[in-house]
Image (cartoon, rainbow, N blue to C red):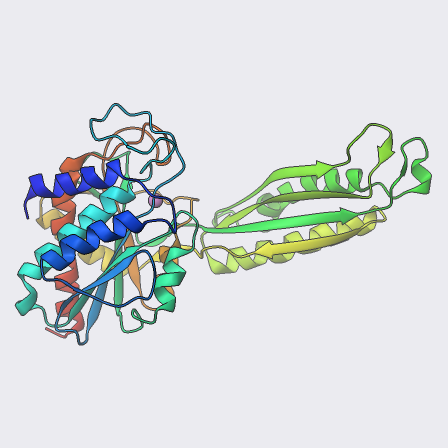
Length: 376
Ligand code: NI
């Protein structure tokens, strides 16, 4: 394996994007390369995604995680290896992640006899729909992992730069839904009904005070109402009005506090307007909280390998990598891939020059952490 070969792998993946839960060709392609190189694969029982295993097969165990799914985005780059599937694109760099961790797996394969334990390399499906990590965890094949490592493309740093931030780096992402139920009537006779629309408007306005007045200013959170709906004509007061939105937070405490306050605000406001309320709150991924000591060791290793290290800002976007951190500590790093267009943008690109340095970094970090866990 060399840089040219790994770049070709990345280009193949970029040309062949597949949506979450449909990554069959991607899985077959990665499996083919791993098997050809004598890497063991674990039986996940899943149709897409893979877990490769290197080393002794016994403890201690470190995991490297890549995600492999693409997005329903129409690519607008002028790359000669642009997507061959119109309407589908690797616009978040998961092609880069897969190639990078494949590179790391093959580097570790070459050192397999020297590994004092096991490295599991996860090629996870369905990150974009927040399902894949939970599926991988549910296989039980990761229960013995003592440390999880991952990286994500970052267009705001050039190739050769690693973003390392201890503590919370990615937010939780929850979805809420509220229905205000009143009593419909003729719009000319408001006294005969209980209009849910002023109640809904009051909820929308009051909800803005949850983050500004109820969250400690030194904590961060977002509460966005993204959809409101009520009524269908001009002279009928409707029976009900509904809204939906998202809550993002960097800690579990802030997350559950916002949920509690939002729920009571909805029901109490509805009651004040003579209405009742239904409230539904769906918990998505938890915040990603990086292990501080691990970040310190990773930054030192990255510098020793000639990478520039930056303390990347946190993000209110979510990542289901947090599901692995329920098993063991770990960290997600930002891999500088240049380009200048945001992740998910139709012109997003990841600089292949970042591939080999990142693969080397993750292989070396996995081996070092394995030695540390083994007490060497
Ligand atoms: Ni992504």
